[in-house]
Image 1 (cartoon, rainbow, N blue to C red):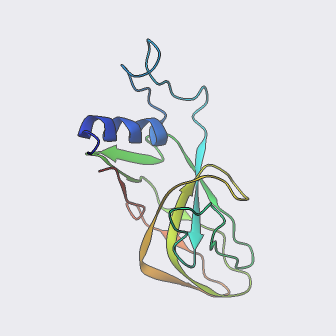
Image 2: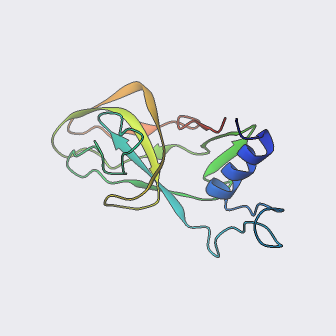
Length: 146
């Protein structure tokens, strides 16, 4: 059994663009949040896995922090049961340490073991050393519901 295309697309719109989903739940449907808020993009050195949280295998280079992306059409493009970042996602510049980033995560918290909603592989991987500012290009965070 699988979800319908309509459900997949409307679920992504609710999560990433804070768009209400009519005809589900209460009379007005599943409503978006009172404030759109943000989702937080994280970098990972290994796949965080299906049971992982936002800090599972998360990057630890000096100055690293998750990046907030608004839950709006200015932050995310949703179409055809897929979502991707609308703008370049730029992480803080590495001020010490090194690592190779192989995966990204999209979750609910700015720090800590927040809820990891989606994860994916970054191709190509990003080699981090002092002075490198990791960036994910427009469309580099691809998520699909199917």
